[in-house]
Length: 253
Image (cartoon, rainbow, N blue to C red):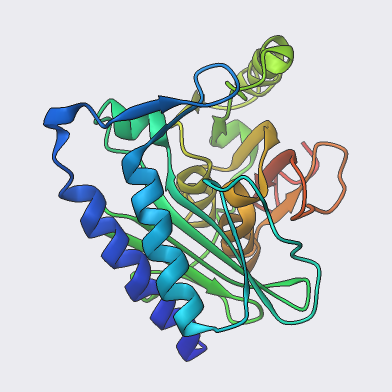
């Protein structure tokens, strides 16, 4: 795997250590954003500052698209582009639910090149490079080979978009009738990793932003899975879209 991916892992680990050592006595310094239950904390902003500084030192001249910015640079251009979520699962972080991750996607010439997701609570470092496989703590991982009837489905509820709430739960019920059970974690990055490592057979959410899936979608595909929109189209990295990720057995469900 490219040396760059290893360096990105170290940057992600540094940010994860920051998350673990946050002084929670101030309640996370919560700020509301546009949309239902959409929050950011001063710690999201701090982690993004660290990511921007260190990632751009690693690859000077790269584009940088972060969640906590008002302006998102174009990613479909020549050269490298980082797409990052400093704390994926901010609501979990605020509540100390201990299911939040640092997510770093890397595009090269408009195509996925690398992905790193670090969940500091169990110390799990997921990474992938295009064509080189997916890894958890340096060990190769693969999606499961189980059908939906023998599997778990992870659902995202698109909480920031009230117009999608009813459809989201209809989709969850659709899969619930076919699988062992459903799960909801509150972090799309972690959800995608759980599909990649075979803990669940399918993940779905009706609207996610590129920083939610830029890293995780590559990790799933490099682990042998399939990622597409609900309309079976390829993901875009310059706009929001639906995301369904699964193993090969469940790809037509």
